[in-house]
Image (cartoon, rainbow, N blue to C red; front, side, top):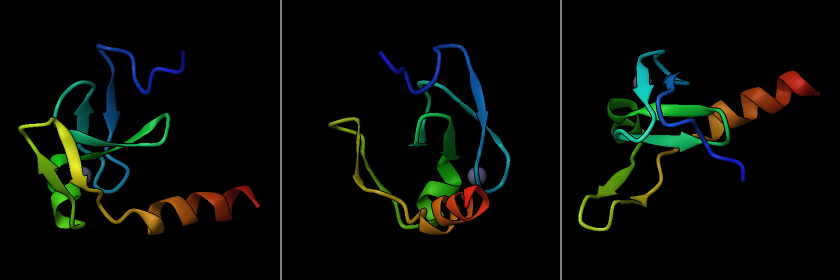
Amino acid sequence: MDEPWSQTEETPCADCGALVRAGGRGFALGAEDALCWDCSLRRGGRYDAGNDVWDVAPEVTDLTSRRSDRED
Ligand SMILES: [Zn+2]
């Protein structure tokens, strides 16, 4: 139902603003946002290429808390 991104969409990295292509290497941050590969690794993420999953999720609490602050 709720596709994170459409297949052809590019989403700006929530940290550095680099474009992250849907289906490419990047960390999905909620329904609309994403982290690029470099930022995901810099934030401590570890990707399991064999299983095509993030073994360790990047640290994104500063990004998500900033967002909820704005909504309050
Ligand atoms: Zn980035």
